[in-house]
Length: 281
Ligand SMILES: O=C(O)CNC(=O)[C@H](CS)NC(=O)CCC(=O)C(=O)O
Image 1 (cartoon, rainbow, N blue to C red):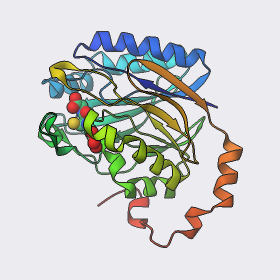
Image 2: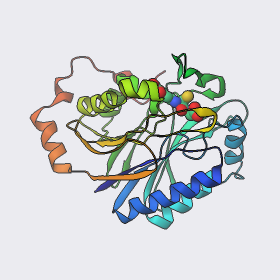
Image 3: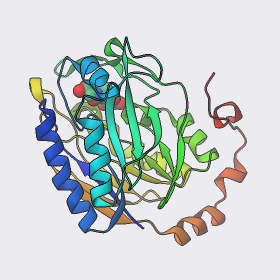
């Protein structure tokens, strides 16, 4: 059971980014991967017309959704389509969501997760402030889905700072958790590795942390350090910056044994049953 995460340094041009992602996913497939996670905003970074990009996709005239379906089926890979902008289901106008799609190896859409926590934060004088909620609407539910490599819980980037979400995913049976990301260089240096390892340790899940790592339009710098972290918090694959396909094996028996030796889910005194039922409302 080989898992892969893709790191990119995406630019504004969608066709160029999709060509890069194709090349990296081909490498993941050659390495034997059955599921690969693309980073946040893999198809486009630094564009001001994301709502239009998302509406084109929803109307069936954009390039990203057909590319995801074609690439998954041609390579025989399950894909987590990092994030792309998509209008909320049934609401074609207005803000888009930062949407992470799970696509099976026939190119069919299996699950959709809309980023729950939006990054509205002042990072530093040099890196400026982010107001993701100006252009994006937040999701309102947790998502787990079964794949050939295990039950996947879906998250995105800034979600990593909210451990209750990960607890809810574990309670919903997650064995692997995807976290496509575009951490800033400043916050990434301080917190990224600690966050992804902590989420792995406390959920006893594999973390598939696929990041943007490099320079983007407008001088935006991302931290990179994409990684696959195992259920014990060990970083089993990692790359600092630039384009790369990382892969690692999921050891099902070892993960099961670790969960039995230290049964965190049985020992939990504070649970979040409201969230584990699948909705936050
Ligand atoms: O801006 C874009 O082009 C794409 N979107 C993102 O990169 C998102 C929302 S602004 N970034 C994050 O969530 C960073 C979180 C983070 O860095 C932290 O929690 O420290």
